[in-house]
Image (tube, rainbow, N blue to C red; front, side):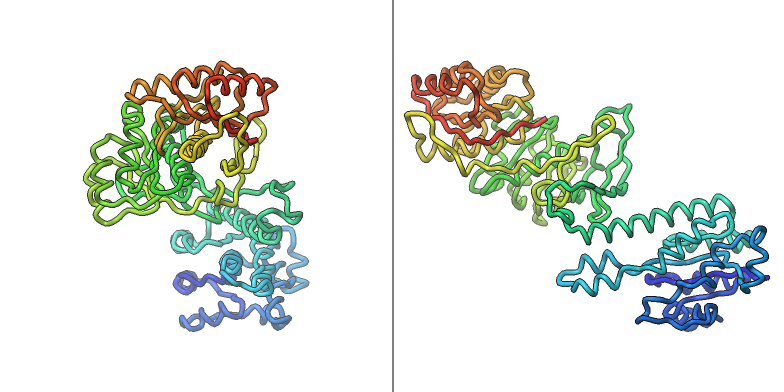
Length: 513
């Protein structure tokens, strides 16, 4: 008996050519209505599903293949089910070529009506795929047009598909239907789940490998980059030039992008080892970069440079004078891109829309041993604050405090940031005591030749003792912005008043671990 293949495809890419090769190898073809028409137009002899089942399509096409004559042919085991096969006149199907209604495309289409999307929920297709995949010891199932050539070649060479091929195709088939169902579930739930909660009871995230990386944080670690299947791409980043991005490049580029994007005007953030070393805003991208670089030239060596604006030719020339690993921006002018590409190994990255973060759909995730932490993103700004000192800050001090507070959000705790005129002067972070972070930030400022007189100090957490305030005041700090909430707040405020320092409480903490 000639082997038989069943075709039922929504994505008709390559289906006719595949069927021609199967027919040439001596296979008979069965197909559902639209697919049968396609194959006949290719000059092939095709039996329609309705002829096999004895039942026409019904309910506007909702029921076509849901019939024992089809599922029996996919699920039968000739060596065990011979009696049933003979009684019901079942002719086994040895290959199922099936892909599903384009639900994801329909659900993603702007302005799509709910009823229209619902009609793109395939029922018969997944049922046939699962039946064929369950019976993979006897049946091959092809859900991806990219497999057509290899499958046809194997059949042409051997007459049948080998056991390893059938198993591999079954794995791909079950993964295909699982992803399809997850997409439907996610659409029905909505971004925040059925209950509207920010962190739903069940968090389903499918991550698809985008690329293998040379190694992880260290050469002995293996690494790869994954992205949600709903938004493919390496974290919304597109490499325009230079060497491939490494694990550390990607991690630093994401932090740099977030930091620069959180700032107004033309902003530049330079990141080194997951920590901002220089951040600035100005009236042009070029000047913002030069001020950010001047904030800590030594640490900026080999860093990641991010902009919240287009990089023009002047900015590109300025950046080209520094050794950097990555430059990332929303856009590069043709002239700017040409200048940067002359640096050869410099990675030039255009940022897209992120899948996570304040503008994405995913919460912040951190993998533990046996669990995953999830949280909403820290996007609270300093619009609300309370003046708790006797002296109120000037307008200029308020601007400096707001800028420093924003930057502190991206520094590892304990974080202290000194800033003035839209430029960081010293950044201290990752210390186990806040006063030590304050001292390191002051030391960095002095090392770069900056005076802290009249500058702003931002602390990501409350000042637990007056010593941090006193250390800053001794350097000439004019205003301090911090969350407040310490049992010693009164002591800290008194120390500020004694030294004429203005102090703001935000009521919001910005720990980062």
